Image (cartoon, rainbow, N blue to C red; front, side, top):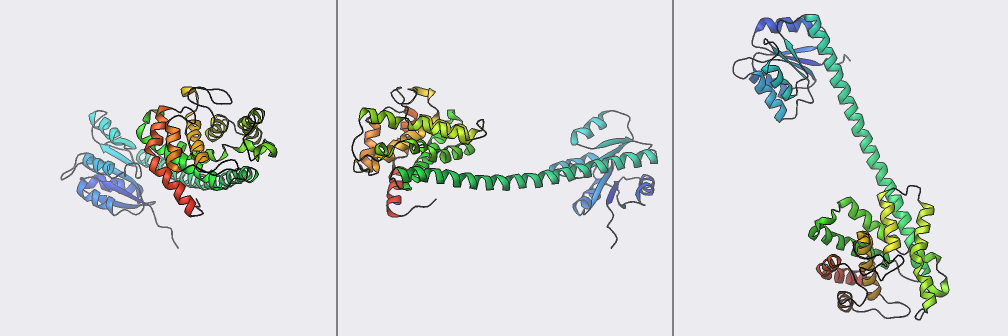
Length: 363
């Protein structure tokens, strides 16, 4: 089957000019003609395989610049190259034409060989550009698909690691799920009410996912301490506190790319989710805004969940009681911004706790 020829549209109100240009291109292209801008737009609208437009400036009914304006408004100027043909020497028309995005400007009288060569060069350039754009789009789609698969794999690994921690510490899988939900809810309020933190949707998602690894270091705590049914001694509590630094060591050894933003969130949350606003937390006694915002968010989520969850050494507090304890400073001092978000999220937190009690809530 013969390959369909590409089209070239010649727009000129003078028939002699159209004849000259048609003679140049008719052996290789299907030549379309229009004698004014209005007819040109009609042919552009019904285009199928248009490779080039040769456009005169001065025409009745609608001039060349009105055609360019139409093409610009309909995002066609980057898809179909336009060579403007003018009888002027270099001047106002040429500058105006380039401002519309034409590929080239030719001046009358024109020489057939030069017109053909410059036209071929422009057609080839645009076709190569379109090919590269299509390839780039395909590659972007491939990369997005790969990123999706990588994220699924990472999510599986994160869930597996957090499950190991929960299995060792006799906690249910609901703890990690709740922390992620609490974190995401708090972040939503933080983004809406405190734009100074400038968190993007991508960062919110990364922080929520990273929150699942906040207690990963507990795998390095002896069972006698981790599973002790009663209150820990001072020495035992000092050992328990090392789960923050143990978790960071695990992350450092297991992650190849320590410069990634996601790794940094994991590290900050793991190390600093027990820091407090007044500097009385651990392990580094950070205070105020020196504590990463990701860790501040997870800190209050972790405390709330610990209060409303039963442990071998205590019963669960009611949601309202846990809320009051945190707001009254009974669980350490938190950032005023974070406390305001926590207050705004009160009903959300209560609902999450109740829903997970009722159902085996799956993400």
